[in-house]
Image (cartoon, rainbow, N blue to C red; front, top):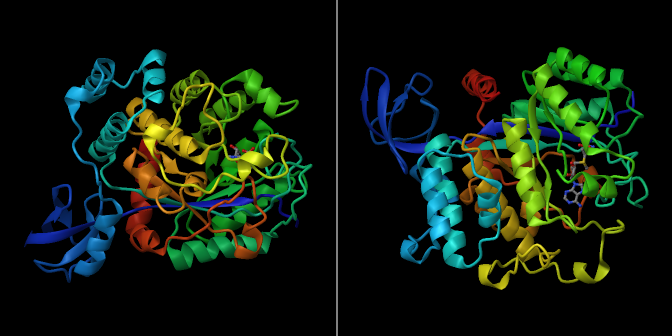
Length: 459
Ligand code: SAM
């Protein structure tokens, strides 16, 4: 069987370290960086007063050293220094108070206002407010996703995409066994519990091939399967759901229908949205969203994208910065030469709709603003930090995304010999962060049940 899917995506949730203050009848009182909590010790009955444990929801998962605990605390550390509120513009203060009062129904003008904010004081406040909201609503339960790209063949000609059919990149396909083995390794050896299968649109896999793959994965391992295979018939998606697919990752790319068809020749936004809505109706856990910073996209378009995500009511956002891909019609060779500066100086960026372009500083800043505003508008939604954000800032992109209100991470699990050719954009950052996996992935029934509960609750 030939496989044309190209991404497998995995999720688990990060645990929180805490120190046991006292224990009574198997329940520990635990102090963490954020809270004092009552934690069930039934899985780690050896734990004693003074020990550090990792916990998720209200159950301890394992005992760890103080050194490990400090390491993970530093991953989520917020270096935010209180800003001078008196210096914030009145309109900004009004929006902050609105959000703080629990009203997440921002108007388009308010969204535009936030996306247009400039200057370190304003931006630090925006990110810190979003991060505080994330902490209040979701605590530090950061989920970890994994992605396996298992074919870079695509029949489409999207102007922005490095694997568009006309682009000269070495093509690859993983066969069924290679995909299943990769999934098995992620599940059994690393502790991942949710795999998303994603592909360029490649008809050399029939619907039946894909369904067979889902069935085989579900039979072989205990795992949630998400798919992301682009536009196929509703009949296919219904059958895939019945075969065991839990979720679907499908972006609407841009809510501007003109821009959509300009960048996706012969494709129409309304068809994509119809499919997304159909999947939601079928019961899929749908992740959807857009690209941020496409050439010609205005801040107003981005505000509309946020409103579209909210109106779709998806439990998870799939959005990322647009990054130029070599060889595509949108790539500008001159601008690509200046893409290596990853330092963010908010005052240096002019993000008026006319002026933001492919400068990575502006792109990063705009994306962080997008995440923060999304958190304001959808306090409980899952927002992953995409690999594209890490591409813009390999050192800190992930950390910055989380501190701007994101609550999930995406790891690439594509076998290395193939990964370099899944070049939807340039300089794709592929570092696997073992430290996150160490805390985010833990084995056992408990983590499965927690995730299952969470997926059901979110929908
Ligand atoms: N074929 C599937 C589909 O249509 O959903 C998934 C594969 S596609 C390559 C995955 C996503 O990559 C797209 O939804 C698009 O948003 C993103 N993408 C493509 N080119 C990109 C670029 N140059 N910069 C950022 N993201 C890009």
